[in-house]
Length: 506
Image 1: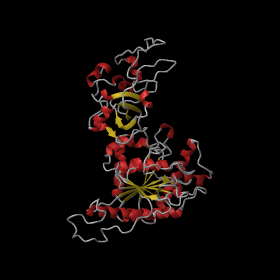
Image 2: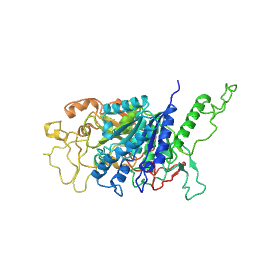
Image 3: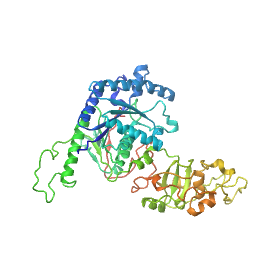
């Protein structure tokens, strides 16, 4: 049985809305619809992640530019989303293709059950032959409380991971990555394949157009998320939507060729198969339109781990030692003995970052004006602290007097947080609150009940609730998918590239 690919196509606002007149670019929209329908008729399952609601609303309301006041932005999103979906429906209806609207926020998938419900909805629509049109629900999403994906590049990558897509197309005004700026260097060459994104250095200085929220850095971040889930990610020119059809055909034929001949033969007969004739159906003879392709990881993360890493917003950080990291890679759970420190406010069953630090250090940086206490301890407020000399540490059992601290953080900045060798190694859902983890950090599991007065689990986090990222990379600052900076922009590598970023890119 032939398996047809699942394809996610992301369109930025400037790809479908004129930046100056704010009118829809009907010619490009029509070509996108024709391409999507052609893919469907070829058997592919197609999802479109479409920005543009606010851009459409600007034309309707006559406002000259995107406002900065949040309620105005949300009101415009409500106005424009109706017009955006109405136009999509009209264009697809002319070709007899049904579509569906899906609006998401990060909070919608933060709960595992809701994530699975959204996943099931996607799969059912695809099974029905419907093309889902996805957008972030900007009317209710509030950036200040961090329930936004941040941009539709990230949303498209999470959508691609959610449906186990084969391809993610990030449509933009750029046709490819280059080894140097082609506007300055005539000998600049496009980079068609990125095998290791960790070794890629790109110029991502563009912040996107005046209508959009994305930019080149968000596309690199989206590519990192998608390839981790096993999704081949492609950057190509949005003004030529037909390229998607040609690229998919090229890659599918190439995949069939490699499956037949073997990945290392590059089309040549392998030993023992010299008698098998070469046919046009098995050989890729024509090249695809110019694009940059990010190859997926050899061992992509599973669905639940993808949700843990990218569907949840971390509420704090747990610092662990190298021994704990080694145990986690061996499929063990996180024990309190391997915890060095805790930062932030989180409750039981909330998501935290796991950050490895090379060695134990004082758990709280002392303040010159006021001595500080070790973060792994609680101090009785009735105990006086001397003005000079080391602070007095008093271990106290769990009691009503400290119950108000449950789920709260103790003031202070962990010394380990500033360690340049610290690196984020994954995410976890914890069995204890921040205050409780502080108190049991470094202890044996058998000492949890004595310290806290109870013991919900011998593990701070069960292995099934832990997802590790690629911990083979060099130590680096932890990076959230919502960051608008390229996590690899300062890395040193022989594979250097410059991404050309015109002002109108989204």
